[in-house]
Image (cartoon, rainbow, N blue to C red; front, side, top):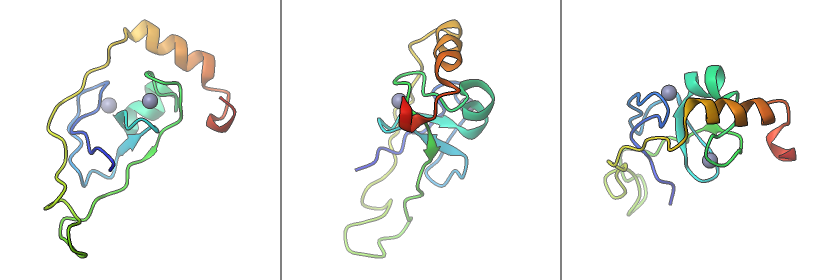
Length: 102
Ligand SMILES: [Zn+2]
Ligand SMILES: [Zn+2]
């Protein structure tokens, strides 16, 4: 199941489960759309993959056992383990290569 992480790993903005600007990579690394566009250039600083909008999990159990009431969002805030210099280096290296060719 997709982990709904509570914040942008880069700028620490809150990204609640219904945030329209939350983006994730295939490892569920989570960033706000502003950081993805303006800083990361669609390069995840943890894995080099691309980022896409995070799907919004329904609040209610429209089907038995589903939705936020059964599978709530994560509460552990994450923080990048790379320096801004290291982040910029990887973005610079990969930004012009589309994710499907990285
Ligand atoms: Zn951010
Ligand atoms: Zn990643």
